[in-house]
Length: 111
Image (tube, rainbow, N blue to C red; front, side, top):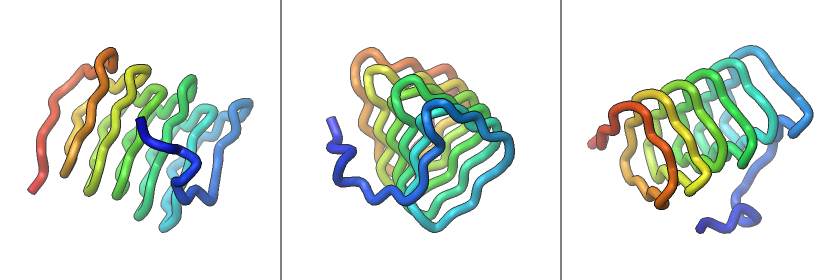
């Protein structure tokens, strides 16, 4: 599995927080709580185990340990951990999936 300590994350939605609205950032972002909205990042997005996004994620790198109810557009590496659940269309440049992850939707490699 990926070493989350090495990721350059500058902003976090804490485990006890729920945010409604879209987020656009050039920096790394980690969701530990709930985001009701879309997240656009030019860097890495991490959805922690137990966290949830109800909306789409667009980023250079996406690491999912929690749940996303919406699409993913990943221009770089997408990692779906065994605890990951994604319900939506997934587009990726590179993907790593671990046994046990749940994907409800279509996956498509972008070129």
